[in-house]
Image (cartoon, rainbow, N blue to C red):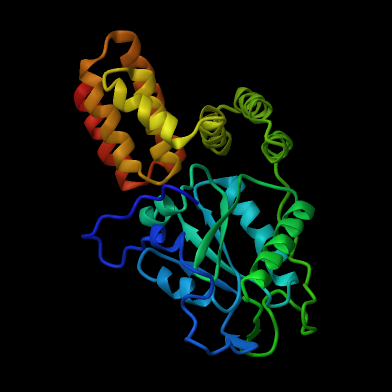
Length: 323
């Protein structure tokens, strides 16, 4: 990971991963003392926050830590998270999973440069490792984790976790054996089609499927939210963070450039920044660009959910500008 910006110094518990990029492997281990071969933890699955993440940086000197940056507001992120749970369990303690809610932890979202959810990264010997963004097939996921274990071994990170109670979550009591999860209700056909398209990286195909679902049932709120989410992914695809931010800095009054950075902020969990950027720009625009910005803000409302307090605040501000 490169060019990771440090978090603000006034945020208590903030995590600055940029200082770890060039850290020597095993720098957190006690000098001259090899790590123990066994490590007992209460679980293989943890919740990471801006405040507690240093604990997992330390843990990564013993066992590779997989980092799942996701959002409860994203259907594909939630479904892929369950796949990650199952695959991590099948590695029988050789990997630990830390889940980060990008909506609640903006510093970690920024540090890992998560432009979309899900984004999956790792920590090995205290250093961040970018793995992939988006949904990948389970077979490919296992290959990625095998490569991660090889990297960990090269850095001397080879411990295996023993879970308190003697069994891994999701196991039937035999070490490393994974119990089949109860089947989830099937997705509606068009939702499944959209999810499969996202899995292939075919955002346009997913957009078509969601639009068809909405045409068939305008009250399908999940399809409306899914369409907004995948449209954002499609707009960001193929662009870099530096490219988008540089273009916006060079043209502060250009609606298209500012919309692109607002997309970036939403995808990274900087929701208030995105709304403030567009609502500050709104009064300065002509009618056509005002309509484009208003439409995009309404898409963000769908992504975030109508009950989000940030949406309520932005909605009130937009209404005051319109009327």
